[in-house]
Image (cartoon, rainbow, N blue to C red; front, side, top):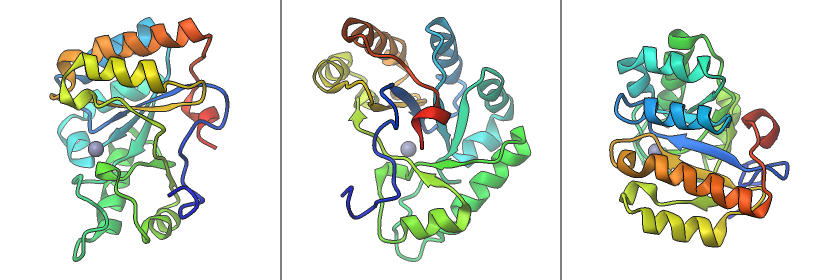
Length: 200
Ligand SMILES: [Zn+2]
């Protein structure tokens, strides 16, 4: 996979962990996540869905005002490889929506459902975005803290890009999930990085 998509980012560029939150903003989960990140002084990246930004512009502003970065997760969260789907439009609309809501030009993209394909890097070039995948999937959306614990205990590395979700599904365990990662990182002497240093 990695050799087929040389311009895609899979892990942190420095020896620091990057936390990423997909699918928000949501009134249910975003405030909880922001509070937790503040408590641990961590700056993360939120790959937002344009339609959710449209519904929650104030929450989107809160994410930015707290010093976090916003990334593009398309307007409608459909697989961008689907035939007969205008992926370029969905990406452009998401960037426009966020620019209008918070005034930020986006630099990073994450494909919905993690689906990359032959068109992905061309789409990135057209939209002046960098494609960001991950090296640690926590499965937090399964809403089972034991699964998250297993993933973190076994697969957290000093340069992991970790995927979590800003969604109703993961909301019940999101605080515990962040705490688990922070505690494991402390045990191992790992640090957390900011998106700008981790995504190069
Ligand atoms: Zn997603």
